[in-house]
Image (cartoon, rainbow, N blue to C red; front, side, top):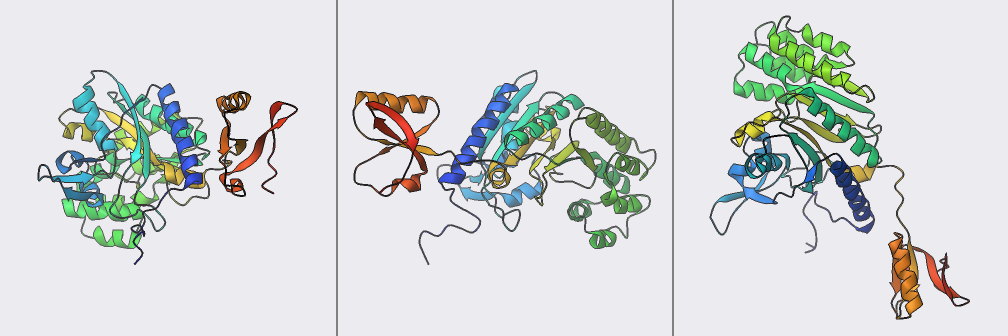
Length: 386
């Protein structure tokens, strides 16, 4: 076996893709900063007690674990940064008012999320703490849409959902934890045959409501279908009211509804949302309200936010041209050094032609060259090496 083979679904990022990822990272973090979101950098490793607090069984299965040689305790490599940011807000910042935080870093998954997915996504996101109203959810959805625009990946659809609907049905039906978990999985997959099998012993009207839930998607008519599942249920009515208010706050965005979308069910506590783009099979960004994570850290802060994978975004972005470079001679000539510095100050990539490497500069992306004509240094089209 080749010693340099990487593990399955783990890849190197080579210069062209790395350049696009870094450009997007800088642009998105700068945009978040303009909206008042402050950058935090949680550690890659934490003790599992802290890393998995409030995140649910599914996150436990996705987390690589190892033993700390210093303490003998079990540590985990983060599979999601959101719980870490919730811990920072709860225990380190400890602010009384609203806190807006953002982040960008690698996470590691025990298994890929799909056939072509990496196990090392580069997660970027923004979180808003301290405000329980719909205004906060609307802000983060608008910020998500703006972030996708900046990344060159325009959202064709933003689905809104609410985990309160499923929780209300589960409580009304008195479902045991194991059955609730199984139902969560089949609803997420919209697997109707398995759903019918799982609910055959569930009492009405919950049985019929669970069977109808996968059909509650689309425009505002989906909300009317949800209300009709169990007429008069206060929790479902409140969830529908929240979704209506949120949609009203986002009139310029392609908002739709999907009440069977339960991704992140174990730590989300209210509104959830997922963004999609044309031609891409799955969601490109996920988010929602997760007040319960803060409670798990001992401080019940309202929280909402979103995250996405920068590596995935760069694979589907449109119109991103790779910047080209200017080849310049190397040397100590004062006017040459001033010309090179001036080009770099204007944002140009200037590569100095070190001696002994003639014939290889084309592979570095040079499309122009700095040459001296009539005593002046000027930029011309690169003709290649003779």
